[in-house]
Image (cartoon, rainbow, N blue to C red; front, side):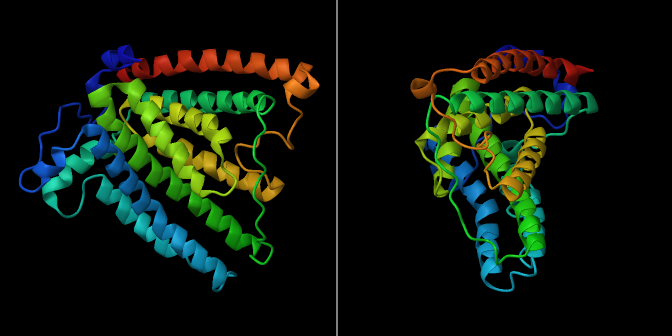
Length: 308
C-alpha cells in the first residue's frame, strides 16, 4: 500500500500534512517521551470515549425517563458539533490546535476523490458481508442479545439509533482512524497501524454482551476497510460517512429483523464441518473472492482519482 501514498498528489488533497510533528514545549515533553504506540492508543481511546460516552449516558437516561420523547438527541447533537470542531483543531488551548488538526486528519478531498473513496469503501463493505456469509458457516457466531425495548416508542427508538450511528461515525473515526492510526502509520507503517487499530476497535466492542472473540474477524475486516481508505486518502471524511451510513442501515436491520449488522444470515446455518458444504456456500465464497479482487483494484485507483 505504500505505493498508493507515493502516487498521491499532495496538491489534490487540501490541507494534507505529512510532516513529522514537532514535540510540544513545556509539560508536553514528558508526554512525547512515551513510545508512539502508547501515545497513539491512549489518545485514540480517550478521543473515542469523549465522543461516545456522553451519548451513552444520555440515551440510557432517556430510556428510563420520558422515553416517549427523544430528549437526549438535541443536547447530544450540540455536543457532537462542539466535539467535531475541537478534535479538528478549534478551541482552547491554541498550543495544541495544530496537533489536533493534524492528528484528526479530517482533510478535504476533491469531488473525484470523494466518489472514488466512497465507491471503494462500499465495495469493501460488500466484500466484508460476503466474507461473513462464508465465515458464519465455518464458526458458530454468538446469538443476538435480546433486550426488551417494547415499552420504548418506535419514533424514540429510531431517532436514538440514528444518533448512535452518527456518534459512532464521528467519534470512532476521529479517535481510531485519526488520532490513533495516523501516528502509528508514520512510525510503524500502514500495515501495523491498521492491525493495531483494528484490534483496539474490536476489543472496544466487547462492551456489548453478545460480542465474543468469534466476532474479531468481522471487526478486523471493518477496520481494514476504513483504515485502508483513511491511509490512501489521508482523510477520515469518507470513513465517517461510510461508518455512520453503515450503522444507520444496521439500525434499520435491527429494528426490522432483530438481527445485528454482523448477522447477515437470518439464523445460524449448520457448520460445514457438521452438514457439509452447499451450493450457496460455494457461491458466497466465489462472490467474496471476486468482489474482494475488484475492491482492491478500486482502492488502488483512489490516489489516481485524487490527482484529477
